[in-house]
Structure formats: structure tokens, C-alpha cells
Image (cartoon, rainbow, N blue to C red; front, side, top):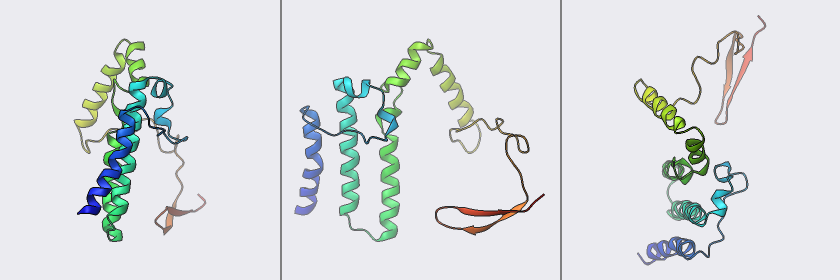
Length: 165
């Protein structure tokens, strides 16, 4: 019990530094979610990102410290990572500087387009946001089709062998 309390205290320490404005936490260089200068120049947004990143690190640390069996570790890690990604400040419409600018620049038309897309996506199975327009790619015109078969399936990918047509 004392170890769990110590871990919780260690996880909360970075959030204390964020609240006091003394945190040096920054997004990773390759993290494109926070490239807009407003994320670093606006003190409120900077602290919001720092709190998010500190929380993300704390959750990852708690999963690491749990010493779970491999399968359970992978399941909990997958769930935790997805939940943390879902609560990213970059996913909040009017908090994200890029989306807030788009709302202003389009006279709120971007919100209307997004709402229509959401209703369309949720009105039919599988009730997931579309990543691409399903009519944008036509087999034989935009996508190459060749006869063949998958000859190897691995954890990282698949190897397909095509026959000449």
C-alpha cells in the first residue's frame, strides 16, 4: 500500500509543477498535434498540453509499475494509450488553435461540415468516423488489381505474391 501511495505521489509531482508554471514538459519533436505556435505561446494552452503530457507519462508509468503478465500488460497498455490519446487537448474543437481558427475563417462552416459528417458516419454501420470518402477510389482506375494471394502473414504485415495478368 505504501508503494502504491508513493507511486501516486510521484505521478502527481509533475502536475504540481505544471500548475505552478514551473514545468519543462514539452511535446516530442515529431508530435504534429501541437505544432501550432499557440500551444506554446499561450500560457493556458501550454499548461494544458503540459498537464496532458504529464498525465500521459504518469499513466504509462503506472502501467509499467503494475508488473502484469505480458497479455494483461498489453491489453491494459492498449486501453490506457487509446484513452489518453482520446482526451488529448488537440481533439477538443474550440481548444485546438487550428480548429478554432478554421471555425473563425470559415464563418462556422467547418462546424456545420463536421456535424454533417458526424451524423452521416453515425447513421450507418459500423458507426465509426470515415477516414476517407468511400467513393474516392475506384478499383481498376485508382487502385491496381492483380490476381495473387497472401503467402505470409506476420505480426507486422503481410506478404502478397501477385501473378502476371
